[in-house]
Image (cartoon, rainbow, N blue to C red; front, side):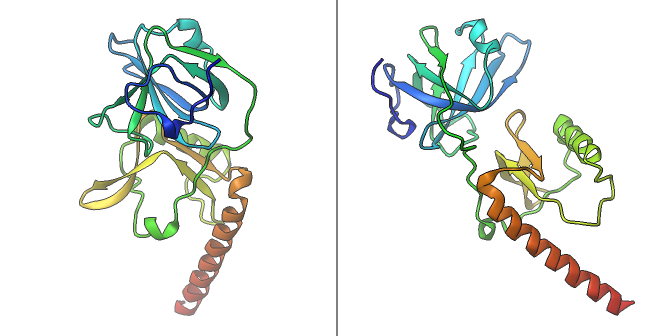
Length: 222
C-alpha cells in the first residue's frame, strides 16, 4: 500500500492517493431518482474533515450497503475536485469524488475521538434558532426525542445541554439564525462526549445561575 496522505495534503485532481478516514455521517440525496447520490463527511487521524460524493452507479453497491458511521476506512483511487458551486458542509474547499476505480476498505478503530470542535460562544452570541422554520423530518425527530426523554412540550424546570453538529448560519426574515442542512445536520440532547464534559459543566452552571437570577427577579416583581 502507498504511504497514507493527510486530508490537508490533498490537491485538486489527485488520483493516486490513499487516505485513512472515519465516516462521520452519510446520507442520500435524491434517493430513488436517476440523479441520486450519497454524501459523506470524512475525518482523518488529525481530525481534518472533507466531504465526499458518490454519484449513482460508479461505486460497488455492496460497499455502499456496508457503510457504517464512526467506522474507519482506507480510501484509494478517488478524485479530488474543487467545486465552489456546491455548498460544502465542512470548511474544506475540496471534495472527494468517487469513480469506478475507487476502493473503500474498512479497517480497525484508529482513534476514540468524535472529531467535535466546539464553536466559540463569542462568535455565535446574538444568533437565534427560530423554531417556526419548517425543517421537516429533523423537526419531527427532535420532538420525538424531546418527548421520549420526558422533557415534554413545555419543559421549563432545568436547562438541557444540546449539541448541534453541521448546522449553518443563514439569514431568515432579515436576522441570522441556525439552519439545518438536509441529511448532515445532527443534534444531541444531554450527550456523553468526553471532549465536551468541561464545556457541558460550564454551560449548565451558567444556565442554572441565569435561571436562579431570573427566578429571584420574578419573585420581586410579584
